[in-house]
Length: 242
Image 1 (spheres, one colour):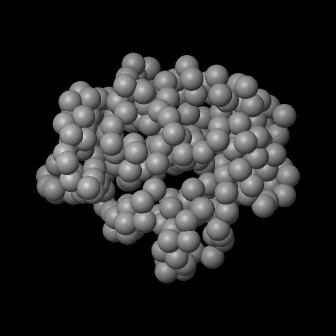
Image 2: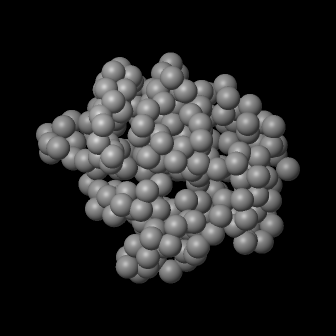
């Protein structure tokens, strides 16, 4: 991810609907499926630390990121259990964690090496929560700015997990209402001749921000009962079957 986007993330992750809604999805999954009191949680690709602060309300949380810029912002928030590290070599002991979150990270890294490392440091029957961008045909310049290697379908994500010894417990698409706007607008934005690509996370309207959060809350509620057939992201809960 480009360096300037870490400042953008730090400024927006507490108030932007996309960041808020993703945390709510993850916390909801943990509360519904993981009954262990005070679980040990690792947030891989912890960014500027807001996910760690929220996850700390339900467990003991560690974070790693491969960006010095990200770790700097975490330290400024007085988050102690963070360190510079890689998803492919975390530096933690085997079978240490009950839950690992990999939120918009897998598309940046080598799949097999990362999932093998997660399997190693995750306890038997421990849980992995993943979010990834959806559908290759939604690829745009924004993916390049974020240094993505790929986008996923539910089928391709399940295949990658099964290959590395994980059982998919629950999987669904997210942000279905954004599918058509992203399909139409991002390709047009990518045609710009500007050398820099402005962040897609800018808040241009508080009304739009609040409305998007309300819509996403409704979608999250419905996702507990129905399968959402498309979206711009995927969320998955998988179990380590060592």
